[in-house]
Amino acid sequence: MGFFLEVLVGGLLAGVLYSLVALGFVLIFKASGVFNFAQGAMVLTAGLALVRALELTQTKWGWPFGVALAASLLFAAAVMAIVAWAVERFVLRKLVNQDGIILFMATIGVTFFMEGLAQTVFGSDVYPLNMRLPKEPVFLLEWLVEGGILVNELDIWAAVIAGLLVAGLAVFFQRTRVGRALRAVADDHAAAQSVGIPLNQIWFIVWLVAGLVALVAGAVWGSKLGVQFSLSLLALKALPVLILGGFTSVPGAILGGLMIGAGEKLAEVFLGPSMGGGIEIWFAFVLALLFLLVRPQGMFGEKIIERV
Amino acid sequence: MARASRAIGDVLLSVENISLGFGGVKALTDISFDIHKGEVRAIIGPNGAGKSSMLNCINGFYHPQQGTITYKGVPRSRMKPHEAAAQGIARTFQNIALFKGMSTLDNIMTGRNLRMKSGLFWQALHWGPALREEIEHRRVVERVIDFLEIQHVRKMPVGQLPYGLQKRVELGRALAAEPELLLLDEPMAGMNIEEKQDMCRFVLDVNDTFGTTICLIEHDMGVVMDISDRVVVLDYGKKIGDGTPEAVKANPDVVAAYLGTAH
Image (tube, rainbow over all chains, first blue to last red; front, side):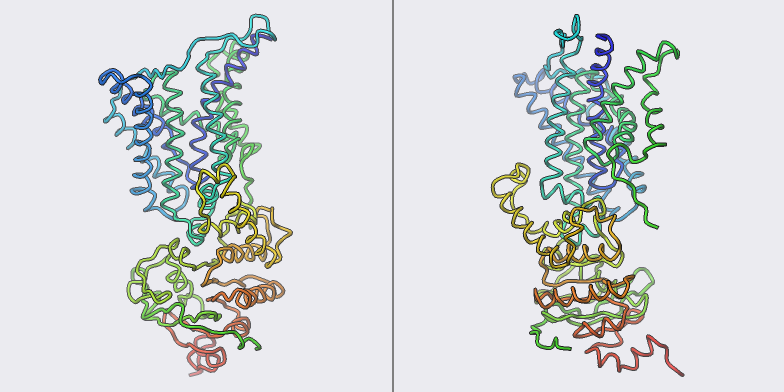
């Protein structure tokens, strides 16, 4: 029982991190109908900008830690703003009213460009990121299970941060004028323009928000694994999460991430020995495949209605 | 018709010598006409005559290569669609362009987009000035919904509504912006007789009640002749007639374009 819970909680907390990456995808898809392949590259870029700025201000210029961290976060956010502006100005603006698949291809191009540029500017080593988040393993639920459950404090912090982010985004999308405009743009470019929604501005805002989500994901993952190129491959792990949760649902991204995280850990530990191990690597994708057969729009996605 | 009593005002929008081409295709050639404040102005013509292109020029989706469009006495150049909307031009589309995932209410609410002023911060909190503003916008939207008799589908996603109702929601979204000039691209296309009659009534009511100037494209000649004050006729991108419905009906060029001439 205790062991099962420990695996489950560990998996859920890892799932939170998948959710963070998937969230960036959902935001852009919801608001522009574009499947943004570059989300992983954005996580990498944001992480690199953050870790290098922190290194520079803290060790080279000797700023106190708090100031250096705040300045680095601001710098990384500014970098993401520039990315958002450049993507809108040089890519999306030329492709107004094009099919989703064309925009998708364009984001693949953006991915390679951004990965190359970010590593050229900021370097391509593995950089350990220390934001002084607590990293001690702690025992939880000692009153329930004998000996308690061993959990890393960093994972708990990640979960808290992700929760706050999601609450903020939900309010932003449902309550504000910009949120409503974003949903409108996703549905129909021409109609959105005709009611006075400036497409260019909206696209900038969406990519900026996705960039900031990428920054959070980059910071959290970076603290865990170090900032390195493999961060950009996280995007691939986000795919099954999206298929489970639905491409248009913020809660779906969260729940999908949790399911994938917990599912793959449980499968590895309990099914792994009888199947020769290594399940963790492919489990998420098989789960996604099953979902596609049964419920292609995901748990919370908008139902696909085809009029004939 | 008993509609002559309405006050027809000054020129609201005038189009002078507009030409528009796509590559080698001339969509519009040297078109001029004007729209007076408060009137119902129709643009008719056979398929491919350039009617929608004309509307797209007025609305800023297309930019004509030659000619000027003067709106409220100010000539404008290369205006973007959202700028046109900000100046009080609203429109509907030939192939319904609604936000399919959103409810009727939210769709019509987007029409209020330009009139929302309170900051993001207050809106996110749903409190203070934003709350007052939201209530006020909701009031306008509910009035539009009442007016168009679509109360029963307020909360339904518009993608699930029947065609005629979708067209009505689209009209509602345009009305919510309280436009001065309303452009309707084939508002009755694909409707049955009853739906057409309803739509006619709404168009006339909008014109009467709010004094909105309306420019519409329509294929159904009966409808056009009944509801419009003046008619422009286009054929192969050229203007071949302009005037009251009676005058246009009697114009031999117009008859030829529609029926073919006996040579």
